[in-house]
Structure formats: structure tokens, C-alpha cells
Length: 206
Image (cartoon, rainbow, N blue to C red; front, side, top):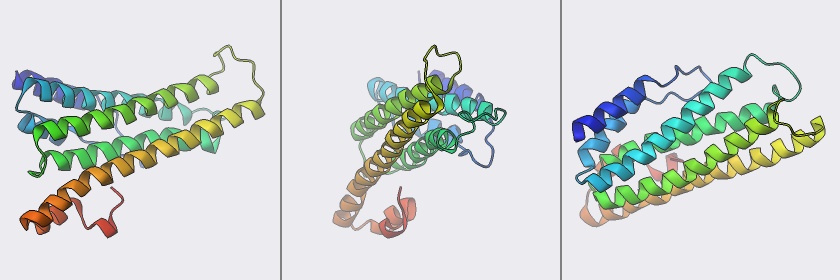
């Protein structure tokens, strides 16, 4: 079963779009391997992989839309807030993939805890995907909505603000999850390893 799931994740990774300078580069191969290493039960593997698949889907959708925006130059589709909102999808995906990949190699977390953390990330990613769909719908000329440019920009500003909140929530969720490992490493005298894995808390936003 593990070989089948690993093959599925590797195939998903090969389908990832090549990123430009403005778009975070996510290499899912190590994440996939670490998922299979830590997921000792079918339930844990399924929960963690579903979260990973959700991230991969939203990341690819955001990348595809971001690429389309580069070739369009009207008032709405070239707006700075639209571009920033889509780029936030990349940042959220990067925060998830980078930090969860490290957590998967951290012996301070049990498989059950990692599954719970994965579920938390999945909820944040799902809402980010919904916001991405909202902004695509608002910007689309064929969405059937009768809105002036000023009305569209007000809605875009609101969506942008919500996406910033979700980016900040993803950072906070990562920081709080990682702090568990720091606390446990203090108790076990293993702080040096944890600092090497995550970096010093004063220097990292995670």
C-alpha cells in the first residue's frame, strides 16, 4: 500500500508547474517520502496524504491562474491586489510544505499528532482555495455579475484582506505547532537538534 501511495504522490509532484521567480518553488518529493516514513497506519497515511493533495491542488490552481494573469493587461486583471492575492496562495503553500516536511522528521511528534496537524493545515488550505475561487470569479469577464470597476476593486480588497489573514493564520498555526517540539526538546535536553531543524524562534516566522 505504501508503494502505491508513494507512487501517487511522486506523480503529483511531476505534474507541478515550473515556478517563476515570483512563485514559490515546492518540491514535493521529500515531503512524499517523509509522509510514507512517518505514516505507520492506513488512517494516518490517508489523512496526511489528503492534506498534501489539497495543498498540491490549490498550489497548482493558483500557479495556473497566476500565469494567465501575466498575459492580461486591463484595469482589473492587472491590478496589484489581484496579483498579491494569488501570490499569497503560493506563500501559504510554501509555509505548509516547508514546515510540515520538517515536522515529519521530528521525533517529538507522534503519527497521530502529525495527522491532527495535517488536518489543521488542510482546513486553512481549503479556505484559501475558496478565496482563490472567489477572486477568479470576480475578475472573470464571463461571471455574469454586473459590477463597476470600483465595485470589483472593493470586493478584491476584501478578498485580499482575508487571504492575508489566512497567511497569518498559517504562520501562527505553524509556530504554535513547532513550539510543542521546542517545549519537549527542553524537557529532554534535545534543544540543539530542534534548533538545527527549525531555526531559532527569534529568527524564524515559520
